[in-house]
Length: 314
Length: 261
Ligand SMILES: Nc1ncnc2c1ncn2[C@@H]1O[C@H](COP(=O)(O)OP(=O)(O)O)[C@@H](O)[C@H]1O
Ligand SMILES: [Mg+2]
Image (cartoon, rainbow over all chains, first blue to last red):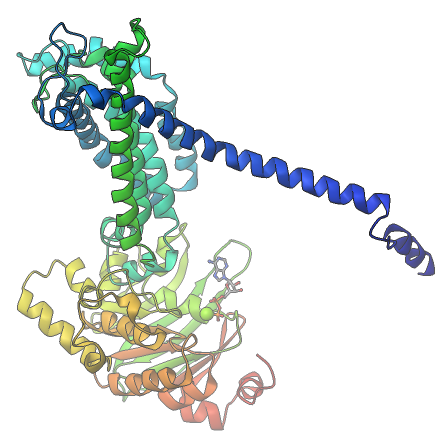
């Protein structure tokens, strides 16, 4: 007994403030703090930097093109001899593709989340989940070609006047691509709904289906909204599939059977050519990027407010 | 063996009911007892003796989890059907036997939608009927005056005691034949508890109640019959006055005099 006491006291001797051990310890703590701060600051700095570059490179563009023209003109042809600078066709293409994608991804994502969270035991879930998440692991370029050489011909059998490049098949394929994002987040949200709410519903004579759709999903609404917002952001930002399958033709239309170009596809298209630094075509990339950022931000803000409004529902 | 009183109407009868969560240990050990119509039956006993487990057999709650075997019967009157039988759909059992949980668990919906949840689930469409039932259930639960002006605000806004009475209203809205209460006041303050107890006494005119309680005074105050359980066995069952004044079993006596549990 006495022995142990001796040992412990040796391990924890008190030292004065200027003792080298204490100084070393303080230094180490400071270094760790600094490294952590820099790591956290870097992501903020990068974000600020990106916004700064987008805005500053876009400003000269608006000295040539008025904001009114930019927002109301219905053609986007910056590289033509007689250039037109209306962002509407690109915004239209982007929103239309996103809309078609969400039409697929939201129902299927929600249903698979419900299935995984409410209907399966852990064994089935361990098998189904990784398979579903594999959808997210397929390179987007593969999805692009899948849309172009498999989905489009298939759709043309049903819709004969579908053009070879079109929004519909690009949107459908993006929708499939983002199912795992939505289902995975939505499932997490649903699984964190406390069991006593489910039991309360079952005790009222509700079926599993009624419990899922009348109690669990409304209770998980805030998390499910986050899942949808992430899905929307992914769909808006998707580039490869639309670049390959939708045709790269700015087209002011709401008809998904036609070709179109999204903002991202335009950026890729123009970045691949060699534009002189400072030319208006060059600036238009930044303007397009800024527009994209504003759009994504808008959806995030809407999502944030929806989440706030429906938070703490259980 | 518990004698069934022939002068009283039976609502249900538990017959040699055994239950276990895993294969090793029986949590209920051949429990038999009557549940008389429009009476309050209290289940008492030390923590972990199987009161909740027994209560959750009545509405087949155990069916929600990895299949558990029920051995024995719970006969529901007047049809005299064994509600634990595999041929009986647990949903149909739960449609007739309501339950209120230990912790208030209102749904993240409005007060109105909480109360009428059971009707919605049963596919009732008629608005006037739904509204009538909502008001009646809230009246019965003694909550109507407090919430009648804000039926469309969220149930989460209510206090704990109000939430529990809302859960009682929710269970009553579908006019169940039996109401199961699992320590309904254990999460409530004394005033809300008194409220709920008054309510239980009021309710037994219309509905048969089985209540699990930790609080012996509560059992004495609200119940007509009491079952004392210990380690999965039903030790003693009888009229509440008899159990509390003149218990037959030593273990019952030491429990109600506070010597263990
Ligand atoms: N879901 C469960 N799985 C396994 N064992 C359980 C479960 N629920 C309760 N038990 C066990 O069953 C016994 C009785 O529990 P319970 O019915 O909750 O007792 P009481 O309500 O009387 O306190 C306890 O030993 C408890 O540990
Ligand atoms: Mg219990």
